[in-house]
Length: 336
Image (cartoon, rainbow, N blue to C red; front, side, top):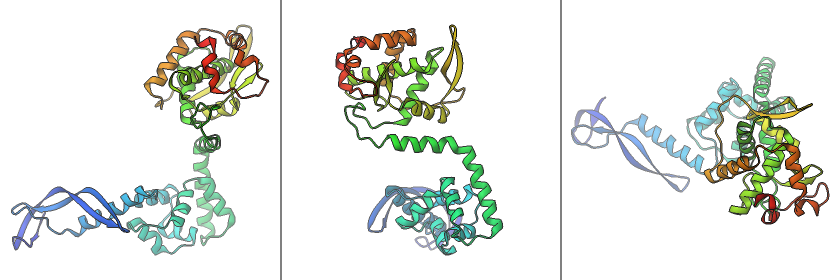
């Protein structure tokens, strides 16, 4: 690239260099590295309107990220997710076209507009907006958008279910009944998947006991549970509170499947890993606890684990449905 260099007072060939930038956005200094055009002869930075616009946009996006706002690229991706033009998005929201254009060019949106845009990533929210009819779309545009939103919802139904249930269960604050960890759906699913990969013929009842042993073992040694699940006393031993819902969450996430399987003379439900790439959220010390549990109890039957849990004072002194505090971990003989 050749441009006029004011320092040399002549046309010069330019090269790209990276320099530290300091841009003040809404009274807040944003610092970052960005490419600039430099004269190959004198080394001075030469004004380049395209690069300067990119620097300003980068500063605005860093400000947005710092304050939890959608970046300009994320707003573009939202629009493209539903195949909307800038004009169609403006008519959907009853905003001015210039507003959408300015946001996508880098102008920072206010918090209220950001919340509206962010909510539309959920196709269910978009369908609700369409049902209200409070928009300026044509009938054809509205019908095409409805079909697209429903198509995305069908593809992502399990994802939104996972988020909804996870948000509901995270509402409980860390205490002695969840091992001083707010329930973490990703960790719970990670443990379920880990056991399903390593224990063949894993019935749901056996999985429930392995989860209990792993969480209480980890709490006993590290002062915090792995998953944040609560455990209730039931006739066949301790079980994660809301176990069917939680297991459904693991299935909805795509990490495992529940299938009918023959156990001796009886048909029961077993948990198996799905044949898919899965990245575990667990840390090494947590997996060490899981290895201990599988090594010691993985070969036991569900019936045997239930019988062992019935020998524990922590189970015998409670009534069905009562939550078992993690303090019980210190006196569980099964973990000795």
